[in-house]
Image 1 (cartoon, helix red, strand yellow):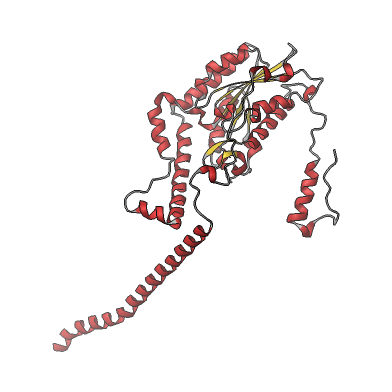
Image 2 (cartoon, one colour; image 1 turned 90 degrees about the horizontal axis):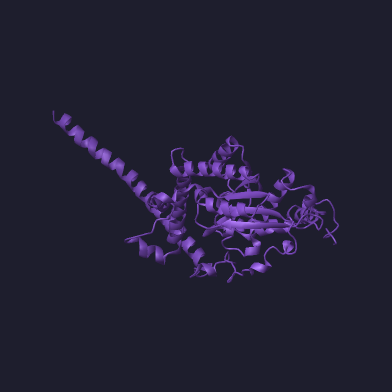
Amino acid sequence: MTLRRAAPALTIGCNQENMKPIVKSIILRVVLMLFVLFCALAALELALRLRGPMPESIKQTPLFDRSRFYFASDAERIHPWVRDTNHVLRVAIVGDSFTTGQGVQPDDTFGMRLERLLNLKKDATPAAVDVFAKGGTSTYMQRGFLDEALATRPRLVILAMYLNDTENFNNYKELRAWRTEMMPPVPTGWLAPLIRRSRALAWFNKKIGDVKSGRGFHRYYERLYDDDYSGWKLFQDAARDFHKACRDQQVEFLVVIWPCLSFVDRTPYPFQFAHDKIIAHLQSENIRYLDLLDSLRGRSPTRMETLPGADGHPSEIAHRIAAEAIFHYLLNEGLVDAAYIPRNEALQLNKYWEAMYERMAKPESARSEVEPQAPVE
């Protein structure tokens, strides 16, 4: 009986002895993991500090190359090609801040670049591109701009829209709540002073904030294009109304769709659903459209945005690409006649750039040992 009673105690003692090495091993592994994590954080902290001090202002960042001043032309200097004639090809563009050209000089906007492209040929009718737009407006709010545009008796009206032009500002409280989800979280409590003093923790906090903001950004546009959202219904009615107003005055109507420039390099592009929904509605109403995503897909947001990471409006480069895409569309669809086709549209520098790229990036497959020569004008 005594042996039987002692057996459980003996078993427990053996189990405890056997557990000691396991517990020690677990503790050693945890300590080792914490040490490795500490070393990694220390290395990241050192690397970030060696890069130099954090810019105190966005103007001190390498990506900030905006003009200090914006130069407006006198009214008498606008549309120089039509100054001495009454026979004019008029194009009107209605839109928001993407059309006014927030962040770029006035003559760098896609409207002014389109006007220049339409005036390359001396034998073509002089062209004037008038802009009727205001930042912070949705399509349903731009009906007055359309009336002003039609008063100029244009041959073509272009409605330039960005994906947020389905916002309904009649319920701004709802929009503001949705937009809050796109903002990165602000550290509070004991974490805030640590992040202020540590580059590594600040880096991690930014990455976590970027993920949260990205999800909120995507969710925001899902809401804007929900079938039951009032702003989407307002956009559908506005597009239909714009088309009818132009048709009644025998004016061609074209919708140009700007993509979200921050994400044009992503595969897949995360807001394709919004483009598809816009296009489906325009097709159902027999409205012409040009999706600029086709021209901007795969481009670097660093070159496409006015200020990458801070202002997603189009840069001068994006405006130029948009103007050229619209120009080609007008020619291909017969909205302007063949007299506007430039004499030398092919860019000979493409061959030179391709040869230089092959020589620099892929020397093993270069076609020739001869140094590529730039074309001579």
